[in-house]
Length: 368
Image (cartoon, rainbow, N blue to C red; front, side):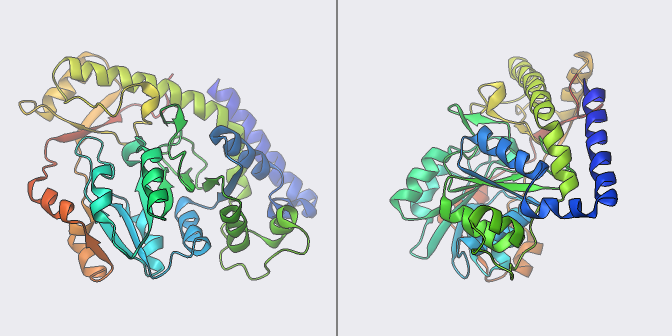
């Protein structure tokens, strides 16, 4: 099945490249969002049951465009203290002050309990991150944002393919950010997307990041921006690859989720890892770099011995989640660009990550 799909993808890529050389006019097709770009955005829109989807060169560029589109400049953004640099870099670039909250000790996602006491009068938006591919309760975050007149952006780069309460990860956010870079559920070499129900967000994303040809196609021939500050559009080859392999990647992810979830149950049954109540079904996480807490008496060597005896294609390695605001390199570079909630400061005093592991494929990223 994989070889057939790979051959089809290669044929599509080859056909496109040859066509562009033989008929130079085809080189301009993707500027208007036609072809594979259009079909991919439609698949994302349908998958999330949302009105709009816009593809990007990568997720970080998508986040930067959202900063411009949502006027998130020189303001305060509430986000998780366990994070990735690419998630917060665009907000820092636009001179926002980050306010870090405490985290859920099991899921490592942003702590919902800390939100009421963490926000200030300056807070304008919340950026949640579905850490390790497990979605946060986006409905609860959205309810909180609505009550406090805040914008809600969900970084779901690691969680495309996971569900909470029968809704895709990040579903209730004003804008859902996706990634198709190496290691993610859906691979396109590089790429990202924003999915939203908000017409205003969609139009501004087009206005600030897409080619005027696409703006004219979508917004009308007299409504376009010759001076778009960002060339954020997805490479047409990435769009072709992702469009061709979308269904295959989705099915492959489901097989991976089933396999990982069964292993998770085994590890808990054998009293090797602590319970993970936030992961209650295969679809509740993509298990992207999933971080598990060992029982107090268990060593990592014992985990690998168990995996070998079970003939599992996984290897356990140490996992040390990083609290970004307390990382010295971060503090030196962004001295006045962040604050921490009181709950996070208290949590930091007792946090221990030396008993956590993550399981990685030791054979292949593909589950047969």
